[in-house]
Length: 90
Image (cartoon, rainbow, N blue to C red):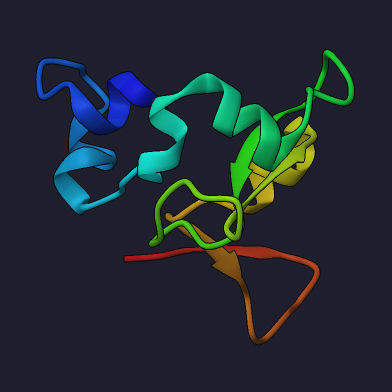
């Protein structure tokens, strides 16, 4: 998370930091992150943002499964003509 948002040499930076995805300043101290998010509830879960256009913060983050993360991607959206299918964004 920190590398993608803060390190312009990171290969994923263009998708995060360059888009303005930020990290709550409180989270510069891991103890604050832990206070906000709590310990990771299960090894298979990882940090996910509810709104991919907003940064990493207590209000926008939760621990999600891989399938939840796959549904919450910027390049995909639910198809209005067939909600059970995904449509690729242009």
